[in-house]
Length: 231
Image (cartoon, rainbow, N blue to C red; front, side, top):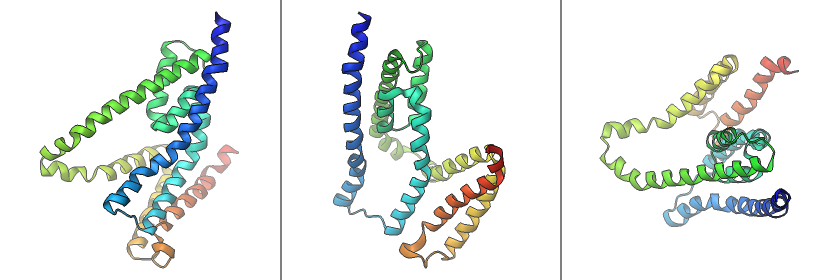
């Protein structure tokens, strides 16, 4: 009976997971662009070239390292099915990995085994369905809630994104205050230069320049301050 289960796992379950995991991963690429395309077609929303490049540079410079590190760090936790689902649904580190870790701990499953692979897949899938259910409810009632909130609260919500980035900044400053302080001063100087139109002479408005400078400077400063510690 045990051999039959293992045979089914290796010959049926995993090939099925890998096949459809690849298909859905490739389908998600155009699907992620669909909302922007619909906004462009039906509402005429079109980002400027400078804004598009600035956003692309900022996002790629932040996300590209995670593409490699998450595969290495999350793979033993999510396993193959959970990795496919996590990369498609998002929230890999803060939701999917937590759900899988909890499930593996409760069931005393050994990482890398077929049992752990199946349990992790069930845990990740459950977290996705729960997330969809919660987001569906919030999206349906969110407009109504916003309509009854007082103006003072709506005004305060406009500071939500700056507060989020401020919290992220403080989180990183606590781990490396030297690098963080230098980069913060650099970012303030670059913002003042942007406001003064210093980068406007660059192609497409130059709004991407401060992001590129900060990213490259971050690598250089970290190497200068901590390079000897990791050699």
